[in-house]
Length: 285
Length: 278
Image (tube, rainbow over all chains, first blue to last red):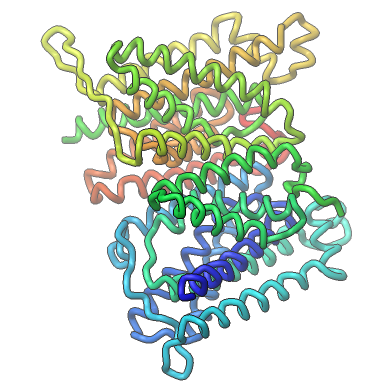
């Protein structure tokens, strides 16, 4: 039962993470390879602050959101004016710099990582596993609903215009880069929330969890969900079920992690055949 | 100490340059960004390691041929069928991931190194120096091919305008295939150089890919610009160890990468063109 609660909690966190990247990839038509960085920023900022203040309340969640917003604003200032392949290069650079930083900074635990991250508290009392699962599901559901608001009415039209014809949008007086930055920052903030919840759940974080491999796997999981029109759910299921199946056959954690990357890499190759020019896969609008 | 750092810088710069050249050629002839160049190099290094009994030279030849076949096959069977440049880029990320993690599954995650040294007269060339010499030689040979040889003319013509080149009698398909194969060999050489210098891990080449891509993007107008950017990154990476802890040397190189990348990516040039150096 405890293990099932653990898997469901991970699923809720992953759902949030994939749904946030989906906003960038599908709705903006941008290919970002640094979403793992925002996930990590949320996790590390929560871990450091909760360690320093010896408590873990919802203020720490807000701090994680703030850190994600600052980092994504920096990225958008430098790189969101770039397009296509160059944007990918830019996000790739940020992801690598981030990974290098958390590997080398002693205060962040270096390559060993940070252990003993405290569980999130409510009224000074640590949440139980089930209560924490409920919190994760609630947060994931609420943030997903918020992100969905970007897909209705005028916002949906604006996003479609940013994705499909920036020149036309500019001629109407709108600022595509501004719109793109806002959405990108919102998605990064959601990823940071996911990171904060993840750190509080597993209570131990290490650099490899937030590296380039993670960003690539996230991208693949997002595209798998979109290609099948099921959305983040399928990405989450593949992400969690595949290692569990391999583990059931006696595979080590290294083998399961490696196979997961191979499957996600192969799915990127396969799904690329069905991509339209704007990076979206599958459904047309 | 300084001379050693400079020699190491030259070696690192040349290794990065080999990857940059591979990326450069694919982006010009294939008209796409290939994020898998680092993994081609890693594959070549591991293949060489697997057949090391036949000697490093012959082993590398086998690896280079294999990688050249893989790059041309991928170009023909995968990338040429894709609907857009964005799709090609996504596919290349996938290809790189599959190659690297398959190697990790076969060989394990640990670092391997192809250690060798050569006695030239009374001087013993170390691994790093061998890398520097082979890299520099490759630089000269490639430059000569591109600048002087007739193939270089066809290469440039095909890269600029395949239709026009075909109208003037160029066998565009063959030039493209040969160039992509050459790009594979360059990446293989980079991988071997890296394995002989600092050693290599199956999944650790993303960083070298980044260095190579940044150098190609920054100096993308011509091969000498790419060389200058690669040497700059290599220099920062190694000379920084004189003042900074070793662990931070890569970070310094990465920051120089960002500076080079931001300075080099002239926005208007990139917006107007859709390919490196065109």
